[in-house]
Length: 357
Image (cartoon, rainbow, N blue to C red):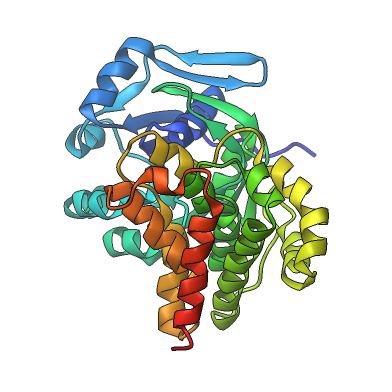
């Protein structure tokens, strides 16, 4: 039986960082049309260098990508079948404000942010029915502006009941992105959040690798503790952990949640370290790269906010969130925490004690 033909769509890709470059160029290599909406400074660099995607041993270069530096300009290059929102979670609120005056001209938006709150923000712009929650589990690095390297292919999840979801999945899979449909968007997003929590904020705060964190008994207990807090929030929301593409979360989280710490560290520690790979986690890259902001408030901070609404204590996530925010602002010294696990563990201990005062 002949397989159905893959439609050729026009995509508006908002952002050309690691995520936008990877997905956008992958789609272009599969014959799709992609316009990248980027900042003027980014556009200048991309017009000079082009876009470069490294897949295995092969480097693909798009010498003259279609670029727009404003929404007005982007819309003149439309119309679009689908939008891909690939900006960081901390840019979502400002982007939504910029998009609002153009809401009637916008296509459905695929939201690929980490965290669990971006979809609600974009729903205020294009309506809930035109927001498609998505998540990427493949590991991507960004050696330079306009360049993305696929470090590990796992796949991506897409959820919702939009009528364009079936052809979207076909297009994504034809582009080699290994897309999978999920019936419960929030279960998918919260499950991805669990993966984003592991050895992320702690690695940034302490300037330690995930392997070092998982090997340290006190820090491993902290990692398990933050996951258990997030699981308590998920249960209160009626959500179950789901396996993600290339990430068998259900058995992993179940073992982490029930096994004694001393045993689970020996069993799971090496596995978790390998899963993180040699690349430092995103929060470490942002903090140590001097960006002045990270996504921690949309990861650990989201657990805290939902916990407050549901009256579930989340002291570990609160300490991780508040400490990393303070380090990002310069209110705390990086040196006070660098390679000093006891500094972070003391804060967590004080926070736990405060619950009972």
